[in-house]
Length: 300
Image (cartoon, rainbow, N blue to C red; front, top):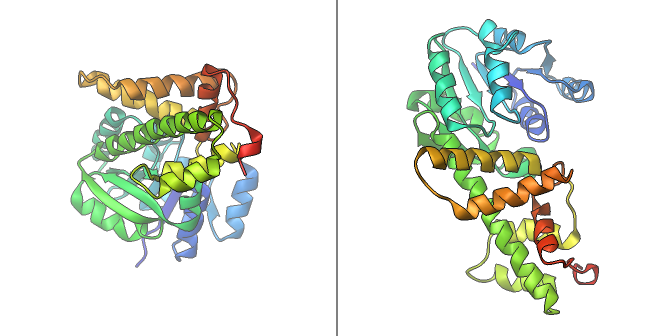
């Protein structure tokens, strides 16, 4: 018998993920804030409820995909939150990218209700969410992971159990700091090549065939050349992840200078009103620092 699924958070990532679960034949009950998205997913077969508590009452595997730590805490433990409707034996699967420390605390609180928790942040962006080819990094108990794994398979091509509660969130922070640092490298390389008069498309083609090849160079490099900053992953969210990574590092007595530099770039763009742009727009800070704009004539 298929698990009864709840899904809370129907943004750029959550909406296509919930849609994939509907296509897989699961009964999915949802809660969200945007009426137009609720209408759209209801037409695909989802049941819509008026609060997280009511979604929880109709589900035994409950997914959350929300912007930040306070959002997750409020949806789970706030007024009309999941804790008011969930039954013992159920599982909360948080797929947001949030603080590992807060994740561990919430897992302990849910255990007191007889409820298990997995932290299961994802990588792959909106494209991976739509195509069901995400990478999911999971923290929590092994037997709970095995229970939810068949559902994960409809969302992702790569699912790895990282360890106990919080391990998935730590892995996601590692992922996002690597993306940020690599993106800074791609931006610097493009500015150097463009200023020297070398065609960026050919630079990208050459580098993708060598040791510098990366998905960031391939996908975000193309966005940068096309100056296409429509959000797949918003700068505000990436800035939040860098903050969480630096906070986790400080708790462990670590210094992450490259992460700190990239965090500064992202925060600066947010402060200038660019937080809703795709994270590849981080290159704009490098353009600003160099008083140089990547030339339109060399993008195509």
